[in-house]
Amino acid sequence: MWSNFFMQQEDEGRMGVASGGAGGMGGRGVKRARPPRMSESQEGKIKLAFFVAIVGVVLTVLGLGTEFWVELSQPKHFQNNQTCKMAHYGLWKSCIRTLWVMDIDPERQSCGPAELPGESNCTYFKFYTTGESATIFNKTTNKNLSLASAMLAVFSLFLMVMGSVCITMSLTKSVPFLLKPAAVCFLISGLLILLSIIVFHQSVLSLLASDHSIPLHHELSWSVACVGSAGAILILGGVLFLLLSLPFNPLDKCTGQKRNSNP
Image 1 (cartoon, rainbow, N blue to C red):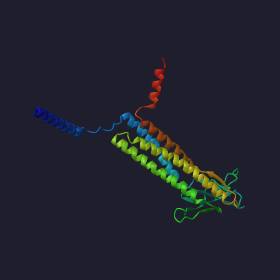
Image 2: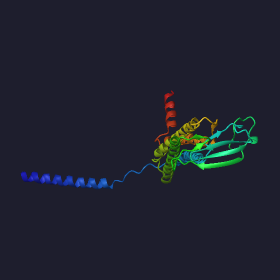
Image 3: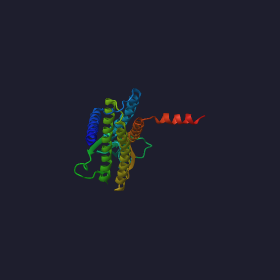
C-alpha cells in the first residue's frame, strides 16, 4: 500500500514539474504587446498642432534675439537742440540712438520711435560675464531681475526643443505615447516665456526708479509682442497635444452624451 502511495506522489510531482516548466517556457515565449500605432487622421492632426507649436518657437527665437523689448525716450526738447536721445534694449544688449528732432512727429512729445534714421551705439550687457550692472541715462539696471528674465526665457527655449524632439520621434515611430511629454514641455515653456515678460517689465520699472534726474517715457516694443504671442501659441499647442494624447476624443464623447440624453 505504501509503495503504491509513494509511486503516486512521485508521478504527481513529475507532472507538476513538467507543467511548471511548460508554463515557464510559454511565459518566456509570450511577446510583449506593441504600443498602439497612430492612424493617418491622428497623424495629420499632430502635424497640424506641431505646425502651430513651431510658429510659437519661431516667434520666441525672433523675440529673444532682438533688442526691442522696451524703448526709453527722453523728452523731444530735453537738450534744447536739434537732436534728442532714446534707448532700446532687450535681454542681451542695449542701444542708445541719437535722432533728429525734425524727423519726429510734431504731435509726439518724446524722442522716437527707434525706427527713425539716426546714430546708434549698441553694447552688450556685462552682468552675464563680469556681473556689472548697466547704466542707461544715469539709471542703473537691476541685474538680478534681468538675469532671472533671461534664464526663464532660455529654459523656456530648452523645453521647446525637448517638446519638438518628442513630437518628431512620435511622428517618425508613428506612436502617440510621446504626445503627453511634448504637451507638458510646450505648456510649461509658454508659461515660462510669459513669466519672463513679467519679470522683465519689473526690471524696467526698477531701472526707471533708480534715478529721477532725467525724465523718460517707456513703452514695451514689438519684441515683447512677438514673445507674448509666442507664449499664447505655445500654450495652445500644448493643449492640442494633450487632447490628441487622450485615448478618446472629448468632443465626440460630449456630443455622444448629449445625443443619448435627448429622447
